[in-house]
Amino acid sequence: MNKVIYKSITQQDEKKIEDLLVIAFPETNESRAVVKLRKNITPIYKYSMLAEINQQIIAQVYFYYVKLPSGRSVPMLGPLSVHMDYRGQGLGRAMVENGLHQ
Image (cartoon, rainbow, N blue to C red; front, side):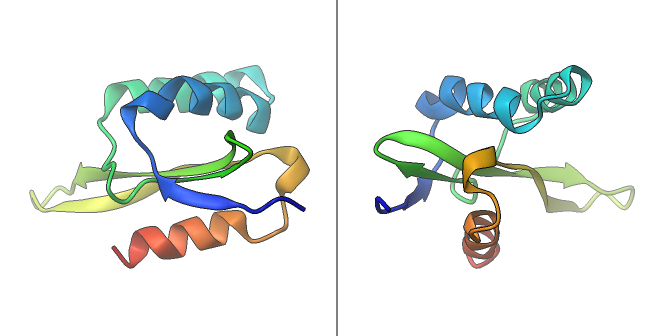
């Protein structure tokens, strides 16, 4: 198996991630909801991660700041998606743990 590379998401990755989201959330309504969420809120790029093999994005997780009713802003995780061919290998877990430790 080729080596998985983990790195922070950049704005240049957005189109490839959108393609992955459609594959990872094959139900039309789910994928539309996830894409809509991403367009309405700016991710925290330094926490948001992707995993790639041979320059193909196979998994991603976003973190966003959300404002609580108290006015306090806290990070929120999601969406997290892993290409169907790579599920169950700990990719999502590794990205979430990295983001939480930033």
